[in-house]
Amino acid sequence: MGKLSFLLAEDYIKPKIYFKSKQVPTVNTMYTPEDHDNFSGLEHLTQLLSSPRGFIVNAFQIDYYQSLPRLIARSIKHIHSFKKLYILGPELSLSILKRSTKTIYEKQLLDYEYINVEQDPDFVTNQCITLLEEGHILYILPETSVCWRPNLITETDKISHSLCSTLLSQQVNVSILATAVKSESEKVVIFPANIPDAYSGDMETRIYQQSETLYQLFDSLKADE
Image (tube, rainbow, N blue to C red; front, side):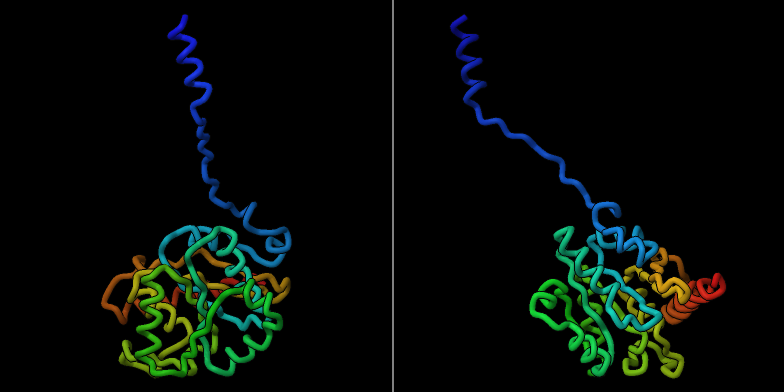
């Protein structure tokens, strides 16, 4: 009995450590009812946010209220991700976006940075490649192609908005989230991730094939209206 009492006493004073399983945020916990009203395809965003790999958001239409960048920045904070959001566009567009962020609190809450694509094309390209390799997110504004002409494609006259995205996608092997706005409901549609490995051929062929696929997504949305 003495030994049994000793064991019971030892178990009693032994510190008890309880392990709680870490819950991965789901669509239901990460997004508000208002988010579900304003966006469709949130599960596609969740999937890429949960991945350690970087990715590209291809915005086909101007988002004056920065609704999707704000959602991404908020979601990154929610899941305590190391990822950071970078918005790419010409200087004028970025200036307008910066001015729309009025309060210091809002700036801290959003916590994303801007890349002016009117700098040296090689510098911008290398910066984007580095950020994607580090696992960050690039949000490419639709007017980006007007000012950014990457030198990795020989036929620069054919550069379009989606080619800026697909060039980086193929170069770094990261996915693209294409987005569009339904004109009737003003709801932002987030399409399933477009994966660079789905295309074959040389670099330039893959870039154009992927770009064409992204435009077909956009056209399919217009056809449904």
